[in-house]
Image 1: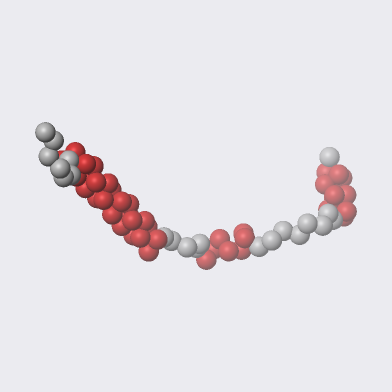
Image 2 (image 1 turned 90 degrees about the horizontal axis):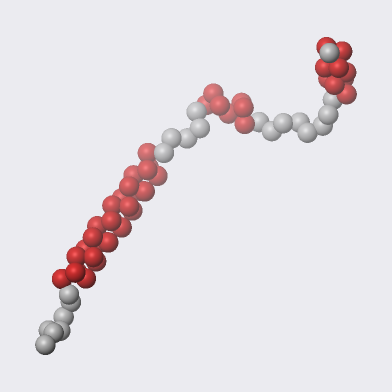
Length: 65
């Protein structure tokens, strides 16, 4: 007759899952606090580009060829 209660294998799986989830959350919290932002020198490269086409610039490029 099988005794009632929690099986040892189930306890092992639940414990391993709990440790894995706790480590995962801990690493994600650590990564969020140590995340480095954008360095100051790179901000100038993040400015939006002008979408209009300059005809004079195209003429200068064409004259080079």
